[in-house]
Length: 152
Image 1 (cartoon, helix red, strand yellow):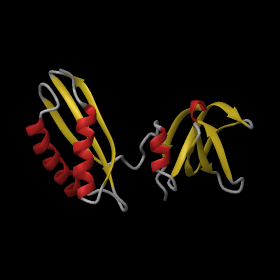
Image 2 (image 1 turned 90 degrees about the horizontal axis):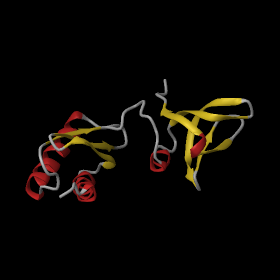
Image 3 (image 1 turned 30 degrees about the vertical axis):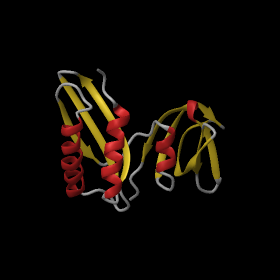
């Protein structure tokens, strides 16, 4: 019997939403003898240690009863992080309005690094407000690396 990641995601979504938080991502890494279930949560203004502990306790209790993960696992709940790398289309959409840095595989107008505010994700393209030049669009496939930037 394999791991039902959709069931885990549903449990996490239910708990997180009921606490007024946002479920950002769910990851399961490792093998049967040492798995790590990582749940990322977020909220306006940032996540506290108490938020993580509350979600961990509630999700852990439900998973202990429903048992969707064969074998043992470690549960970790955290925020996405201030300098998080962005990979999935949903991450670019979720962090709209936040400052980010993109490194492109192939230059656009002799430039490979762009920094600005994310302006969404649509049709396989990341939109970014790069300042005076306005909003630019970058093909997701052309992005080698993308990361949130802490605003000073």
